[in-house]
Length: 492
Image 1 (tube, rainbow, N blue to C red):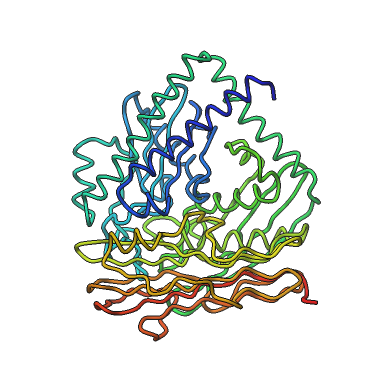
Image 2: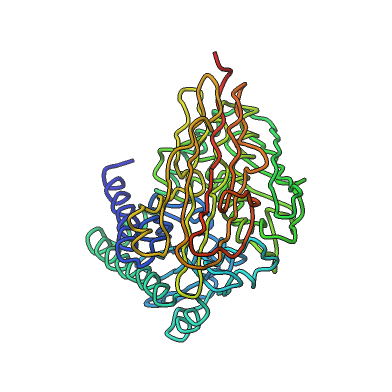
């Protein structure tokens, strides 16, 4: 890569990253300003991702579908478009996406709003059976004052929702200014040529890395824990052929009556994440890195659901299990880490006055050359934890305990990371929703390493299911023990 390309590439990545900083620093909700549950990126005129900030993998891998849906409606300069429909490029309804024209392309932001309506506060119902129960559905539409009023009228705590949307809009205005400055400085033709080459460079690097992998067909299966106590299968076949990878999910369970369903865009995101981890993890990301990967799945299956399927847990929990399953298939060919916690441990609390949402970190799998990290958000989540001070200042909640969970990581030559214990005391009556996984069985160890410990959910010391929505009273204590990661290799 020549010097000018490096300079322009750094400038484009800088715009995406500055968008993210502006969004985080001007957001109203703890979920965005503290947990940083948001993502930003730049796309070219052809709808290809050129630069992204290092935010949420499940957001970023699905963004091209959102941009394609809006490009099809011929957006004009100066317009900002909004969507959250999982079946037109969204992920789940709380993830609200904005797309706007900038010189030579599009700016995109996606932020998880702590409520978008629906049957339960924080829009994370454990028992939803169709999409409309999970909140307001927005197909691609121009963000006008009327659309904003409609959105706010269907959400709880609307002023906080307004603040987070305005923060997203501010990030878009910043991207427009920065891209105008870059074009003025370097010239439109050179910047456009650099965008082409950055996309092509990422593709070349990933293809070269794939060629180093052993050709073959590698299969794996894993299980999810729906609310009815049964199990759902995620099956995949990974075919490596030259410089391409095909991932097929034939044999996966059909879409079901709960909310663990995934739109195909989320399934692709999970697959792209695994391939990036195993090929060129340090490569500056662009859509070119996705080009050598083809993902297919049967229609109306768990990982390629169709409307009106409920999907709120698919984005967070099924995406995590897809990652586990695809890694397990690659493990037949090359060394991979042991399984991590494989869940985001989604916890939502709220009533008419407030809505609170968080994911909780856990133990990650050990690698051939190192122990797994403890108490972290990685894989499809990649968020931060809500600080105690911010949580207690803004919400009627008190953190009673937040500590590592010793011994929950699997033993082995390399030990899995430990999960955490998170205890929250509720200070006023509200609704609790928990959407979690890895409660029936823990994450698997690799190459003889022991499994990590499964997680547990409790209210006032009494166990509750992996997926549950219930009323809690002032003074009740909600405890979540998150899973530990699997160990790697037999213990000495």
